[in-house]
Length: 174
Length: 108
Image (cartoon, rainbow over all chains, first blue to last red; front, top):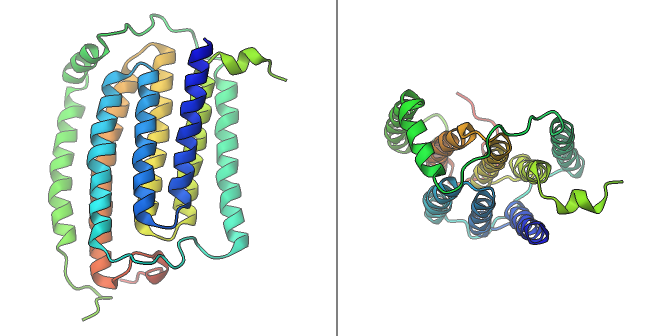
């Protein structure tokens, strides 16, 4: 119990620190690297929650593929100096932070009040073969969703290539 | 005043609180930052926070549907990052800038 609490709080502290650094460092490359650390922290929390497969997928897809994509796109640009990385206006900035804090407070209150009405689990998730159960579910009950997801990825792959090859436009500088 | 037992017994509310705070961090990044790529990173952060709450609820309810949902959300998020970065590349080709104050007035 005690060690579980210590593990959770230290993990949460690291996670929130890295997330805070992600949104505050002015250099986008540093933000991307801090976001990698945040993703790895989220994967650790998934592991803590008993979702080993999802934790592995998180590491591979997010911390691996997506963030490498981000860093490579950042390397394409010439971002020597980020002059004004935050939006201007103290009042509107404070308003934005306040709106986000209000949303967080709303979510916290909803979470706090909805926990009491949740029923106790009928059968706790069996440890060890969650990945097997997940695979069986994915290829029986959710087979159509899985196939549609594959089609979506194909469409996105073609769309990305065509979007990044667009030339000209009304605002083009010739 | 919650007693020490509430803090020490890690349950669903703790994970939901962590998820809510991460979500608001992502929202602040989208609202406050001016760099398009950092805004996309904020969107990724928000998606991760939602995934965290899905997994926490899945553990609490003893069902694997949350895991399936997270799997799908991750796939959509990867596709979304790809499309977003392609748009950023095409914007950079036109404006030579990825700061949104230079293309606030997208016309036509």
